[in-house]
Length: 249
Image (tube, rainbow, N blue to C red; front, side, top):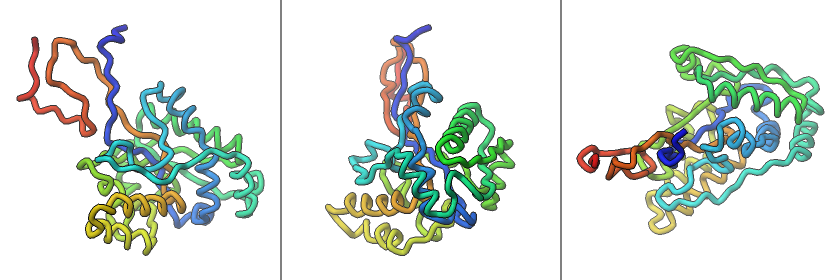
């Protein structure tokens, strides 16, 4: 009703599905690749999330301190089917039960239901989606009592390491239980790499996208109405607005 007042600003957030690598099927990188290849991220962001989110074809949000992701995920249904057949699940045959958990929220439920439909349509598999009260969700997430899990992360600071450090082998938030010595070594080397630091971090992110212990979905955004008389309220990735800079005319 007031489009001239609507603001949709880029936010330092990446939303993914974390994969429990102890699951007998999801432990196979071919299956994880197939799940990613069969996602229509642009449809999800445009139709399900009303066009106010950007599809995530990589993991670190764009514009993070000048960082550029070197990898890019794609959609390829035929390749996804081939990988599933190669992994022993042609047309979803004999695919074991997969339970996806998420905290109770309208957007999360709509996205989960669409992804459930996409995987059933393209791969012949059906995941069970479990809508949990937030305290129960965080408890089960902490105990890694899930097969797939909603995981949204807002950066603590504007740098790719606030996202990439999460997936070091012994990191507390490494929900997937992913261990990759080469990844750990790159993250450890980045602070010593000088001008090549961002390149080293991009190399690490490429390993993450190659093995897909997480399935990137979309990047965050803030949505609000701003009265034109409010001055000094400027868009920024952390959505931080010190009130000493804000005035009302």
